[in-house]
Image (cartoon, rainbow, N blue to C red; front, top):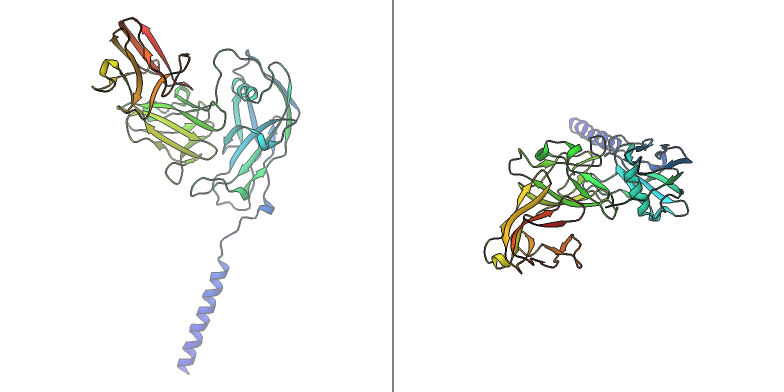
Length: 361
């Protein structure tokens, strides 16, 4: 009888254990109960006139948070999109990508987006806006398609204005330890195509306490502040600080839609006939922090030629556009010195497109 009793106890324990296992199943995301975001400001049918005089004014887009049935989820990402009223959102222009439920932009920045849509300056245009919410994978930051929620569409009439001088391209600020964690005076990287793909050069001096930084969507900490994702090379709007390996001039890329980023060390120097195109060490450049550019002053002979290359290697080098318009391009033409003399050569990498200055002293 004792053996039978022991056997029954063991069987009962197995049944109870199995029952417990079945009860503690993981919760499931139920999209049938999810609630889409809703734009609360500006109001549907709002009208706005942009001018050069009010370019520094701001407009804030606000929306309610998307609601999912689970609480232990990655931060919800929101994409604010805009199209002309007679267009579908398949070709929408992305205005902002954020984990916040609001986005503030200046009239000048909004004007750039409007003109990129082909709108006519000083003519009122009917536009449509929506907000798309989605969850992202914790492993690589990619969008989880089945979690996408679209807000209802609102309409607005906006009048853009004509700009003069270089355009104000969409940009990210890059505050970090190297410049005192001050977004308002941080250098920028740019998206000339206004497609959430940002690129640019940032110089991290050797005397920096560390080489930590973030990408921010505003010149403050009030916007989206991108840090490191769960895996190398990914971004997270709520992540820890990003980091480059050490001091130097880095070419950074940031994809705020795919949540990816890269860094590549590119320390430029001057190379040309004066050093037999690399037969002797390249001419080093000095960082001018006040003017945010690289510079050197040196003597040239008549008919000397030069260009700029990174890391004493020809894999990446800058030369002149054809025709020469002051801007530089990869594998471009040589700069040719017509008259012998002392010159200051400036390399400007802090803007949307690299350019140079050649000044006779």
